Length: 473
Image 1 (cartoon, rainbow, N blue to C red):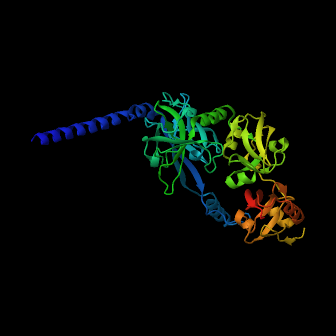
Image 2 (image 1 turned 60 degrees about the vertical axis):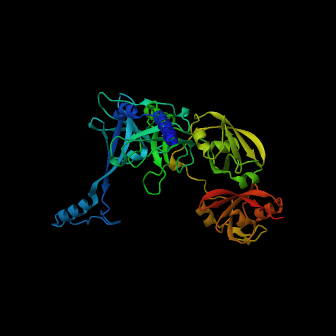
């Protein structure tokens, strides 16, 4: 009996300790109820309308028949064809979120939420619906600024995204799938994610906060109730949340918003180079101890980079006071630099470190950022294991090249195939030397260091890319 009681007592003590420990752990978890009550009123639902022209208008090249004046068919033909040409389908709609940043009625959301909208409707937490005016938007950062006219508007508190740390709690409020003021919580998974598609100018905040269609443009809060990000993208294979959500840092967003308020548009710095990530093989071929930096694939004509003396094959490792670890670090560093400012850029050229001075210019518009433009064919083989030939004038024009390049006609077993060179690639540079013709290609071949890896620049589907090729012994 004594042993049984002692065992029971011991079990109760252990069980009590477990409950105390569980309770203490539960107490440590944050309570989001007050944050939600304070901030939900400043989060808005955004819907848009867009008139969609009917695809059943006049067939290409068909015109209204030109009938004699007074013909009884005139009115019938005009009504039939004009109605078809001007017919509209029902309004196309999109749905997203946003948040009020000041008492004057300025609202922040994503550019993709209001893109091509003919009308933007904002629904407040008190069920008021107002038509918003688009002040301006920026596709490159996916930020849009709206304005509504209303009294007694609740506003959010703007935080500082540069103080964020991985592992801290975060909360999102938005309109996923149209469900107003839905709340989801999680933690900051990573910061500075700037290698997402089409995100050269945004170092995204990665979270595991559940973000779904309709959350776009909504705020990401920290535990102080401050907005630290704008929910923008999700990584998904199903269209729904999969644990990877990305938000625009509020510091980046406010820089864009302030420019839109002041000038109606956003201005960014421009260097004028096309770049590539440096992997282990390329680093070795460039004479670098470890992979880092941004390899220069192309220097745009009459750009700041060309004027400063940048060359294809340079590896940019520092821009001003910012280290460039990945190629995706460079566009952000350049884009946030003041126009006209002279910046020192550290590069590695043919294994040696150099510093260039460049004066940053204004980033041209998308339509102005065209690539650089542009003999009977001869054929030759070489020790690298590929068959190459001179480009024809037509091939140069199609590839957007002027004088450089030879066409890779065939790749057999050997160094070229192992490096990843394919049939149809255009060889532009080999071991830092321009390849303008078969003649220049043969000259460069003679000087290649045996047994070592050297960089080779090719163009594939109009896009340049560096590869590392090991020269046979």
